[in-house]
Length: 203
Image (tube, rainbow, N blue to C red; front, side, top):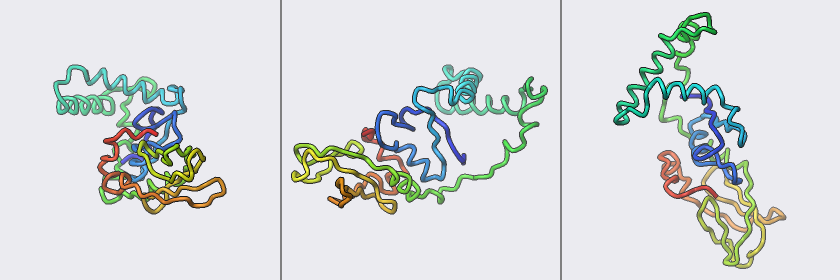
């Protein structure tokens, strides 16, 4: 299990044009993995990884793989060569396996029991989303419409998730609670299985 994963700022890991956290980032947080997003339009933030992925893709001859099993075999072989057989000039013509013994240390073995949706809720609860209530009294949260009430139409409301369960608290500009909305899409099973991703959750 990695401690952190750095990715670009696009989907599915980031949503650069919106004020929400991507479902994939929430999923990583629930596993105790820190999602690190590159700055928008700054691919050089991850240049070493981008370069390494390009090299691995060429070594594994990805485009020639007939199916996923073949792809996995080729990637495993490419990683074995990269770590254990390829002498790196800048490292003194030794392999990475010889120089970096920690590559084989399993400091965080996979354990399904560590999945904790509360870590995702806590992460998302730090975000406050401003939404304008429509003429029909509705607001949209993660691409799903919720009723706030026609009495609040055209008003700006502020929405945040509770840190202990999948419920949205809707507040007015004076921090008064207008409504509490349950959202089963963020239940533990939905988040664990990423089934909340089946709809286009981007807004």
